[in-house]
Amino acid sequence: MASIAGFVVGLLGDWAAPRRIFTPLMGTGLIIGLAVYAARPLEVHVPVLNPMGAARIGAAGK
Image (cartoon, rainbow, N blue to C red; front, side, top):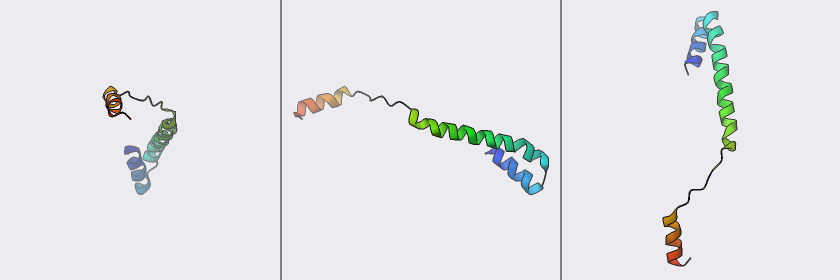
């Protein structure tokens, strides 16, 4: 968030230094965000066994 604010300050003030500093930071943040978003389907979901739920199903006869 700070990189976006620094970039905007550089644009509004028409200063080159903040844009040179915060543009690569903003790009790096975007790349990291896209990588994390793309890696979400790769998560492995392990079902959690619930012994009390199994006992209730067996007791009810279902």
